[in-house]
Image 1 (cartoon, rainbow, N blue to C red):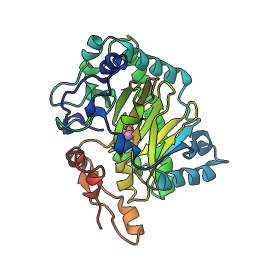
Image 2 (image 1 turned 90 degrees about the vertical axis):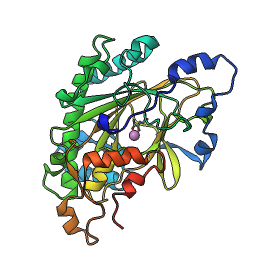
Image 3 (image 1 turned 30 degrees about the vertical axis):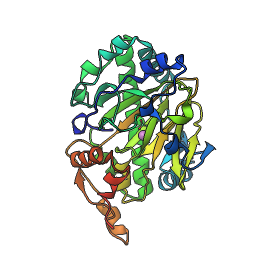
Amino acid sequence: MAHAKAGASLPVPNVQALAQTWHGSGEPVPVRYVRTEEIGAGEVVAGCAIPVVDLSRLLDPRSSEVELANLGSACQHWGFFQLINHGVPDEVIQDVKRDMMEFFKLPLEAKKVHAQVPGGLEGYGQAFVFSETQKLDWADMIYLMISPKESRDLRFWPTRPPSFRDSVDRYSAETAKVTACLLRFMAADLGVEQERLLEAFRGQPQSMRTTYYPPCRQAADVLGLSPHTDATGLALLLHVNDVQGLQIRRDGKWHAVDPLDGAFVVSVGDILEILSNGRYRSIEHRAVVHPDKERISAAMFHQPCPNTMVGPLPELVNRDSGGARYRSMDYMDFMKNFFASKLDGRRSHMDAMRIY
Ligand code: OGA
Ligand code: NI
């Protein structure tokens, strides 16, 4: 996800409300949500141990070198890792988790005060609905521009619970610090100047998607979030209520991710893949739902500023024998391609960037 003007969604039913009435009905799940074949394609591998990166070990001169190699390997071979000892105070995390859970407990009318408006992406609703016939995800979400502060549209920011805005504000500041730290270490791993990646994320724009996946008694027939790569730099995923559902695609199979308590699941986005000239990988992932537990997750996305040119770092292109593997493009044009390609192929926005 990225800047709100690049693409908008068609209105569809609220899934939390639908799930509540449907659950006791004895009816099969509405056909627009049925994706049995798509989900069943290929087996799902349970308990995927994605690499663990320890931020305190990166910061400690005695272990930094070894941990940096670990970070680099995770970004190159997995495109995903879990970050532990990240230094975000527990209180900040507990507050934001509590407030997100409270928000989704509100009556539908209270949540709808912050509903998406036609032509926009921000607010409470559903993402990526571009046709009246496409299959739908079993989830609702609230998407907010968070940073810089001028980008905030407070119409979409919940006022209930009353602490919501302050909790998100503190969480945003902490995750921005963690991200700046990671981008410096990634630059070191790539062998470029320390601030080089951060420059592409000048002012560190952030947006956040909090997703609510209602339970579904036909969980094997629905998808919570369709397969996608993150069209952003870096995403920090927080498991708000400790129910798992994330799956990543590796060697043609889906692997269920089971993160450690308190870890952030970090996803390398498309923009980092491009900046690193393909050394880092942005990989496909999706979310499934639980038969009787709700699930809430929050992804904090870190993306370039709207008018930044994104392309492989020249230092890396000069070093790589094959030259540039991606075109350079204005970030807004990249996002336009991303939305345009949503219906016809999951990676086609990246295919348009690739030089063969
Ligand atoms: C996302 C995402 C996964 C999840 O919001 O981009 O991948 O587990 N979320 O909710
Ligand atoms: Ni994602």
